[in-house]
Length: 136
Image 1 (cartoon, rainbow, N blue to C red):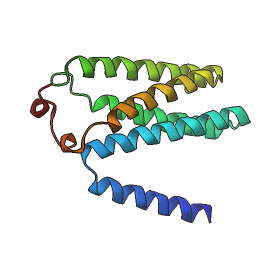
Image 2: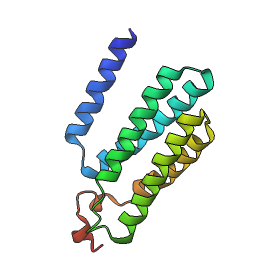
Image 3: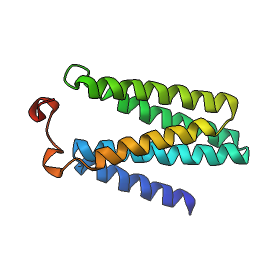
Image 4: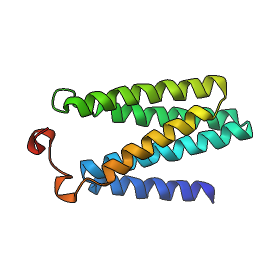
């Protein structure tokens, strides 16, 4: 049953990604990072090392993907600041994993939630525009 539910969820996410705007894809990635970090923290607290490692790995993959989407040439100070935040988050997650300490994970979750909150407030008429079209 659990395997069927996971397969259904994957198909649902894949179909959402196919039709999603670039803005929506970033929203989904941020939400996925938060979800994986919450799962990693729970696994850490339960002493479930394999699940902790898997979820931390997936969260790091998502954050690295978000970081790789930044256009340092077109994004100006916003891109530079986000790049530094992503670098900080990667370091915090790595520290949390090595020290088996959930506090840095909480800190990263809060940072991503703040970024996502700002991202969610972008008006829909800007969702498909490039940085140059917006005037950044």
